[in-house]
Amino acid sequence: MSRAAGLDRERGAAVSEFAMLAGLVSVLVLAAAQLALALHLHNTATAHVIEGARYGARADSSPAAGAERARTLLGSSLPGTGGVSVTAGRTVVAGMEVVEVSASLTMPVFGPFGPAEAMTVTGQAYAEDQ
Image 1: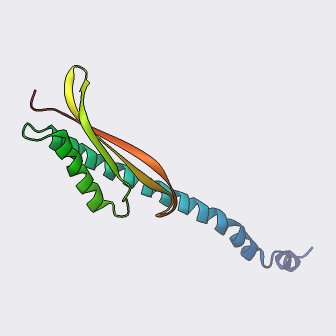
Image 2 (image 1 turned 180 degrees about the vertical axis):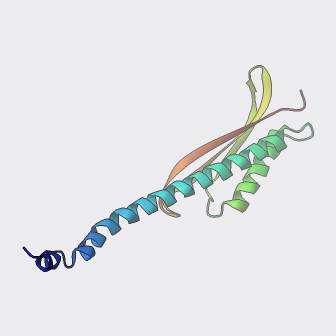
């Protein structure tokens, strides 16, 4: 078999290889983007509930004020999360009284669209009025 005959046999192989790999690469890119979105939502929500717990743990404040602060921060930085449920209260951890703020919010499963799963984050801060 001559070299020219071998090259003729592989004509058009690049098109079929691209078609087979493009789908796989697209799925991998979308999975990485979904992971990035989930981590962003989780980290932002965690930071906001911790801020709410700190605000509610001040000597001149209350856990309810901390929950409201967390709710305001979540609403302003994570648009489209209208189903946010924020709760706050006092609890004892290792013999110390802390203010605990928890938020339950929805995280879209397919990018910013599609069905949503619930995610709960919690923040605690040492109660200053002890």
